[in-house]
Amino acid sequence: MTENEKHTIRKLLYKSLIALIVLALLDILYYFTLYPKDLEENCSLMEISMRGEKGVDIVYLGESSNFSSAETDTDKRYICVMIDDLLPEHNVGNLSKSACHAGIYYDILRNIPKRNEVKTAIVTVNMRSFTTEWIYSNLEPALRKEQIMMKKAPTLFRRMLLAFKAYPSWTEEERSAMLTEGFKKQTFTLPHPFPFHNAYDWDHEVGTNCVMFDGSHPALDTIALACHHIKHFAYTLDDKNPRIKDLDNIVKLCRKRGWQPVFNILAENVDQVDSLCDPNLMYLLKRNVQYVTDRYEAMGVITVNNLTAVRDASFLDRDFPTEHYDQVGRQAIAENVAATIKQRLP
Image 1 (cartoon, one colour):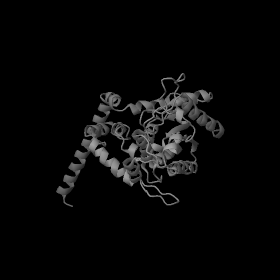
Image 2 (cartoon, one colour; image 1 turned 120 degrees about the vertical axis):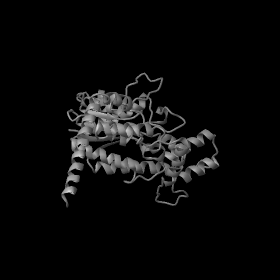
Image 3 (tube, rainbow, N blue to C red; image 1 turned 90 degrees about the vertical axis):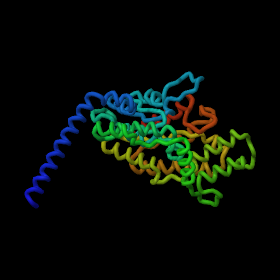
Image 4 (spheres, helix red, strand yellow; image 1 turned 180 degrees about the vertical axis):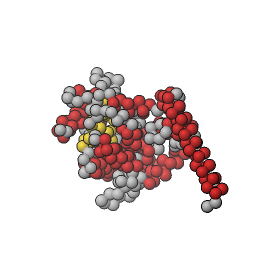
């Protein structure tokens, strides 16, 4: 290497070092000036994470199931508040936001400040969240935008990603195409012959012919509801599902930070599934719940199976499957979670 080449390399290294120092100084300047405002405007999730440092030993991560209530409810307490009341020796904190799923819960958990008193993390598990409909939900882009500001990266770099819209965004036409393709890939297996092998074909058959599994021809809104259940529960869960990967990450994070994970598998409207859909759908739903239970109990997770804990009358939404309950339903979930914690936590 000639002396000129060495000199050129030294100049490049010097300029690179100067650039890094300038970027570091700009990042510090941004952190103490504009960052708090940007965080407030673009990331409500970070504020939720901050609640984990406020003297709570149990954190409850949920979505709208936690706080939805019926107008006629005389008790409108959140599920997490009910759990807190049932566990007087503990202090349960609420880390919930509408439309959240395991991927969002992971980001909330890992941004809880290092100085905290958390010992247990109760994580809501919606069986619908594993499916195409939720993965491509029209609420997902807004959540993914917030996740950018939750990254473990320099604040200025996160702001740059936000400025360049480095998060998924799609039109309704694009979303419709992704849903169609996703339902075709949402396959399932059964231990006996069945004419369908994915959610798309099963849904198409029922929706096009307007015939229920028992041969009846009910009103179109009943057909539509049956099809919604098929699209949300006709799948075979395995470790390739992105939500399973998110739950795996949560388990690893909890191990690293010394927290006991509790997976609260929410109640689905099994009464509707039983009455509206072929029995194979209930088989798939229960088998997928068993998959979650077996997989994560083996990893040291405490699982609470609330799948059948709530009756049809306690579900608030009548034309679409949700995990929104009246006070009777919320109380049933809370009691099961609290009882399991009392039994299995030291």
